[in-house]
Image 1 (cartoon, rainbow, N blue to C red):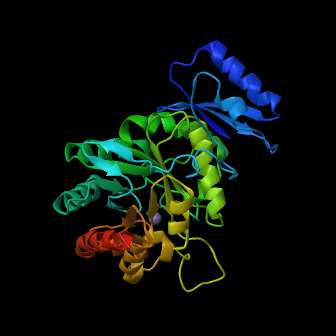
Image 2: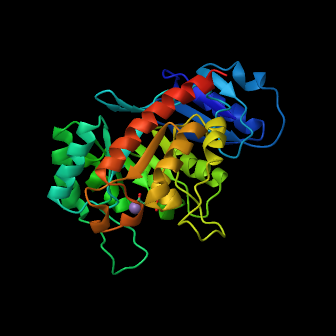
Length: 339
Ligand code: PEP
Ligand code: MN
């Protein structure tokens, strides 16, 4: 059960409400976010919703049978829009394009990607400054100094920053320079990190775990929401299967399923999803047609020289073409949506 509270609920009304929910045998958790206040009731007993619904201070009450609650579409049919300011948003009905290198490498590289984004009307840039690498001897990123430099250049050009946060201690130091915190696949169930991101008021994009189910991704998002942050984006980035011909298997099924189960926007990452440069455009467009609200893919001036993930990174010419195909495919999809 989710009870949405009125913003002017009094302490006495809140106390009475909590007592009533506990009396029907439900455990309660209070959640306060940037946008509202909720009481989550967890229990199995059938009860007459009017026993609670008549109390003062309630805006609305919903029965949500899913394991995850706040991210479920069962109580909030209207899709959540993530507004990043300056007319940049990630939301249902629009197509977000996010591109950039796997790793932020140098000032020259940042300037080249920012220029590429500006030339192609792309408003959001990705890149890692803390890199989770399979080998500890591989390039591990430029760190906070790299992020500050990136911020200076990107913000002057009106480009928003999407970058991975790897641990709780980084949340605060990164805060001034980040528009969207990315939770990487390897951290998808790092519940301390998710708890920490619940306390900030900036958007969080959660990638599906390498062996994570759709439900586990939704539960990860539930963690952040219940910690107080509603600004969430879900990202399908491929899962590990028995197939070895591609780096991962981009689970396109997850896109419409997530859109049906949750009110949160859904992004696809075809770069990590297939891991093969030649097929990134096809999978990106397939993701658009599957119903995604955005695509995040890797690009670099000279992918063969990229410090990481060059094999799945597009050059700027390919990226420019893909960006316009994404937009065209999205217009076509909107016609299907009318069916
Ligand atoms: C990345 O976006 O470069 C990255 C490391 O992604 P993932 O966590 O999906 O592997
Ligand atoms: Mn990468």
